Image (cartoon, rainbow, N blue to C red; front, side, top):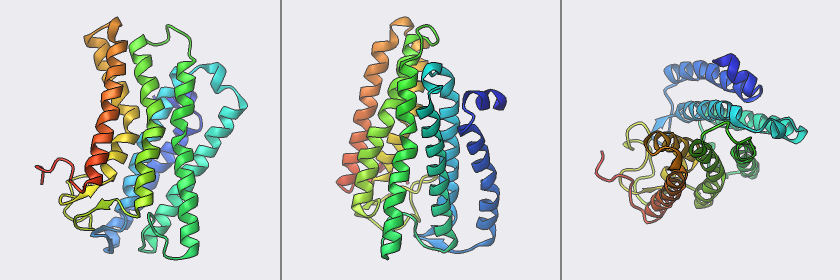
Length: 265
């Protein structure tokens, strides 16, 4: 399977493996370093981002097999992938370095130098997320018959919506200067497994859902294609629209200072 993934995506696959291996020293640091930041282990954020980026890169590598070879063979495609790799590595160096110093990586604008780095890391985040847009185009251009129409539609819309939804949610989050909107400014006591605020709004919810459009919509397309059959393309588009509406619902909920799933502890 790894050989197939590497053949489909020779840049994203080895990067994903490297980041997966990098989890080992981070887990060791968590075991040895008792420091906390915002109520949680100082190494929790680097570990969370490593997991998220491994999932992201492996997803892109798997979806790359459905891209049009005529698009992926072009020089601009290869250079864009190399730029995405550099952006991913820069993000992890920044997040890991901040953890090592016991300070925040996000919203850290306490000094001119950190404010400059934070702004550049925002550019890097946009760059690495733009891989979904280029892959959406390559999937859209692929020859008919390589995928059932519903699955192709699901892959396209999942990839195509990821960047614009992320720009809206993450851009607002960055401009807010914090992911909290009211409530206790601490991740301690947050929603189990996610850390989302239980007594106020948390913009990370909409941001999380936005970035996972590339998973949710294709999975729904797979289910709909099996359930509805060849006529599922319209249902896939309807689900993509409903998913987008749900992202904006959680976004508005957070902006009103309301917690996501308030009934959960």
